[in-house]
Length: 432
Image 1 (tube, helix red, strand yellow):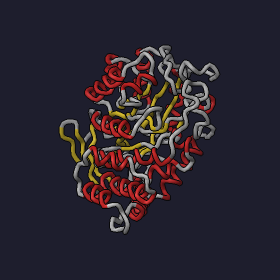
Image 2 (cartoon, helix red, strand yellow):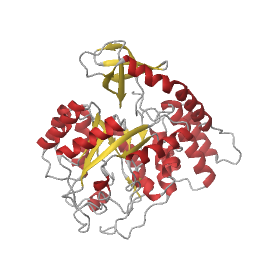
Image 3 (cartoon, one colour):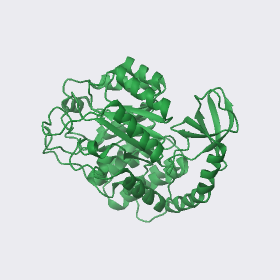
Image 4 (tube, helix red, strand yellow):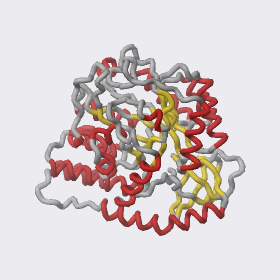
């Protein structure tokens, strides 16, 4: 199963290619020297990844064509909205009507939505976020693979199960050849077109090592590569971009300076934000966001987290629950309720309705077994599947009992595709 639909290039001006998908025209950045109009390509995250032989592309499109439009019909039906329901709070309907007309909501209006408590109104918020998702981004759902190549970390973050606080976890590092083999399997055996390379902040891998890993994967198996190795330095970011990385996954966790200091002793939020800002200037796609349910966190903090995410030119919002790990200082802090995570996802959709891809995190799925469907029906449109070899994935224990840690890649794929089909989503990214 390919996690991108082939498209046909119709024109190229400078580095911007126009691509036709079943009559829908999209755009993507082209970095392939010999690409020309008429070629068939795969695109992810607004980048053209590789060319396909015409016969192969047409064969895939023949299989997809009927399914593609069937899925669209299901998605349209499930995302229909009725704002004429009786008994709704007048202020809520005014805000939602305003958002439906494309107006930018005020901060006070977004905060009002985060503070909703009446179940019927919260459910309407979810439905409205899903309506906006369908209106602006149709039924595409990004499906990325993630390779967690090291669980060593030199940081003492107060919440994370692979921080220096945890003396019980079995540490591992994958060799370069092991990482290459995992990438080969994910791309060639299972069809992933986008991979996240993730680790703790592990100085065992120098920037030179990371550059070699990225450049080798790009050379052997063209794909969209995100890096997620913590703060590698601004020079490191530039070198990794030059090596072929095109995305950065780096949460800022909290925009509240005091909360951030408590979470990350010895670190400053401005350093993390400098990485994110520099990455965007270099051309990276940004995946960032915060944790929900942190000790001392307020609804105002959550709103500021959403607004900061938007201000960072974020491609994909990642907001997940704080989950207490028994081997960290915050072990006794309870996790947030499911509704709080869903409200943040929905409000993030209303804050950035046209552009945002919103991820249903593995952390959320760990908190609630129904999280993936609930999140996708509340405005989200992205998931990540773990393609780390099973011998390692069970030890990437950033929180206990992590969802999917005992599932093979094929099982994850089948479960995901079954869910996406049931709600009318296509497991693909149609570019920008």
